[in-house]
Length: 150
Image 1: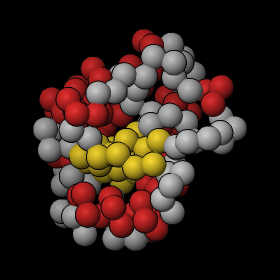
Image 2: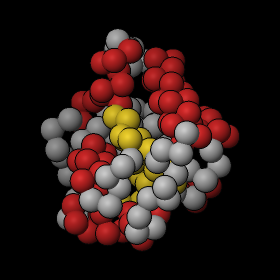
Image 3: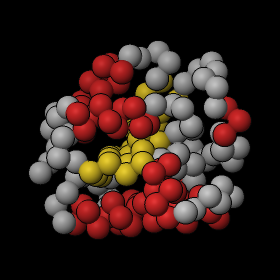
């Protein structure tokens, strides 16, 4: 299983991924966008740099999934073509779009050309301003199932 938690910076991606791993997904590998950029020294935040980083994350997740390892990805994933690339590798990938209302202090890092058509892509959405961490986790469990598939 591959689960993608995506959305603008500071929407709760890493927080929820860590909570899922501490809970019922304890044997799942977590790929975080910031950590991936540090490992591969990719500080290019242009569209091309983001696509390179996202496709690299998708390739790693696909490899791990093929070795019977569940994966949670917590990355911005702003471009439909990158989400479609991951879907082409693993059609059963689950996507959860996290968003929030108000300000959290990192809006200057938001991706201006974020592409999202919730109906076309059939993604689960959570407003992390309106739901507690526990409520978000509960809804993610309902979406993907109570436990990992391995």
